[in-house]
Image (tube, rainbow, N blue to C red; front, side):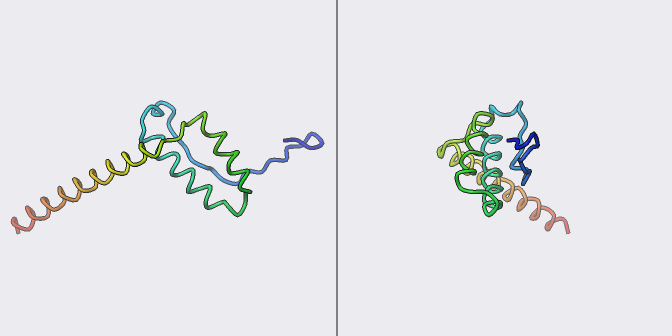
Length: 100
């Protein structure tokens, strides 16, 4: 928006970022929207609720929001990966303990 030929917009925050080449991946979109929503929550005292809705609506054509089912699947995959990582760490710790 311009008033008297001067810009009247104010930068308040970087909302989130993404790699366009990875938008076909649910994880990319899910992470983007989680970061975007967290950031919008943090700057909630600087924007009105209707402005937040407009921001989200402007982002949606660029990064399609994930569905609740997609988010749930991502949560399950993340939890499973964390459990595999923890299980692998336990094995390493046990092996190292036996070596001593």
